[in-house]
Length: 224
Image: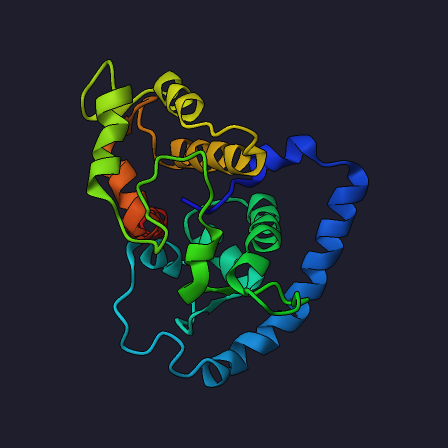
């Protein structure tokens, strides 16, 4: 999993950091709307007829116009579709794009639009996690099953919050502070989004790996 939650990062940011982030967001939202209107031409054939990997499917929900490039305004819209608040959606869109944009554009200069390139999302995979995605973004069933075999103590098909914490502690790699932080944020985000009565089901975890959980949450919000 690669998408961070805004609520965790808030704790570590100063007032100045927040000002800079929101200043960047305003700039991005002003100009990336123009970029998204022309990016389908620029990215024509970017995804082509290529079959998407599970990791690419995981992020395609955020690609509102399906052109293979995700801009901050699209991520904001996607979070709003799932019922997230305005502030949280804005904050998440900025943080996600600052963290992932350069990783999905290897060999290129940083862009002030902070685009995320879907076909290169595999380069954003981090360590200290479950390993349920391989280095190409393919789903690894054996690693997924290990999550529950090793950590689902109360119920074989679900995780409590303490069991999620145990999973994160077990998967820590030495000196991989970036991976640890991202894994924590990923699983905390998933738990906040998908738990029912304090339980994160196996079905829900599987749904986030293939991206279908986001569509499900958007439909639930739209029906309210």
